[in-house]
Structure formats: structure tokens, C-alpha cells
Length: 290
Image (tube, rainbow, N blue to C red; front, side, top):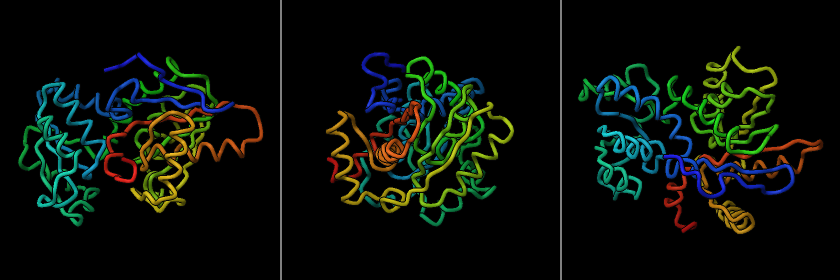
């Protein structure tokens, strides 16, 4: 799935560059790394279908459906929402890839962290394989080691990495994979970062290479998860025009804005790399950016 053509990374200004995972893995971005291990294990164990969950514009379900189809594996997506509502373009995409859709109310979806939640979802699929929200289980996090190798292989040198954070699995995998001194700034899509912080610290405790540090920045400027006020729309349009790139408002735009703010405050030398994790399909859910 790797596409070596085109510019995988580009400089934005002195000391600041951006790396595009979608240009390595078109349409998949960081999900290519998190889902490949579970795809491989499901094939080895003849487990099917792959069962997971997400929202109506989920990058995770979108990538799982595409990768499942490519591997010849059936997929099932439990979607937060109402089956009677018109389907988003993302849901139409995954159905076209062969994914079976089932729907959960918002109340049911809030129980996804309960210990018996996955077991309840899998009752109709005894030979299936459950993939947690975002693919952020131990296998998915371990798969991100290849992402770090790709940064070293295809990207520029960097001292600081700025990247989006959803569940926290990709950031955790990056921290574990780094073998150089580096400060990683995670730009959360959420107002509260306690759950993300706990996952990352729990996975990485005592295992980081010397000189690897991280911090999480909560989403406090644009209204929280999936909010896209006019101010953000204008920022996206200005950035896309200035740097000739494409962003979406949940993750990548807020990450680039934070990186530019950090670069203004930087007092010493050093190279910062922004990680564009993909997810551009979700942009279609915001008419103001059409």
C-alpha cells in the first residue's frame, strides 16, 4: 500500500516541516500501522469477521473496511448513531467495501470501556476477532513501531514531534519506537486528556529511550471534539492556501495550528516535525469546508 511517489514531507518554515502518512498509505494514514497486526493475526488464525466500532465519520472503521476487503476478511462495524438517519458518505464507503453495519445508541456506546462490552458485541460472531475503538490495543500500539521507522527512512531529522491524539495509541507507539532524544507533543482532539494520559503512561512506563519525553495539549481553543467553528474554518483555509496542503478539522488542522504556535515560542535551535496522520475522508462531514 506504500506510495513512494510525491513529496512525503515538506518544509513549512525554518525549523518546521510536516510529514504526510497518507502519502505513504493512501486513504489509511496512521491506521495502516495500527490495523496491520490484527489483520495478519486474523488471517493466521482464520478468524472472521473483524468486529469494531466508531462514529458515523470514523477514520478507524473506514480504514478497517478497506484493509479487511484487501485481505479478504469480512468486517462488522458497530456505529454510534441511529440506523434510521441518512447514512454519511463514510458509512456508504464502508458498506461498499463489504462491511456489515450495526448501530448503537449513544447510551450503549458510552459503555464501550466496560469489561463485558466487547463480549456482548461478539455474541453473534463466535469466530470473529474484536478490534477496540481506534485500534489502540497492544498489537495496534506495537504496529506503530513501523511508523517510526518510516519517519527515519523517508523524513527529515527532527528534535521535536507534534502529532494529533485520539485514543492515544499512536502516540504511545511512537514513544516506544523512538530511539533518539525527542520531545513529543500530542495535540488532543478532546478537552480532557486524563484517559489518554493514563493509556500512554500505562503502556510506556519504564520503557522509553533516554531523552524521549512527551506532553499532551488539551483542545481548548475551538470548542472540543469535532467542533468546527467559523474561526477554525478560516484557519484551515488560510493554512491550506499558504502551504498547499489539505487538512481536516478534528485532528490535523488543530495539530498544525498548535505546532505553528509552538514554533513562535521556541527560543533555541531545533527541528520540529508535524505528523499529518491522514483522516481526510472525515473532512466531508463539514459542509463549510466543501
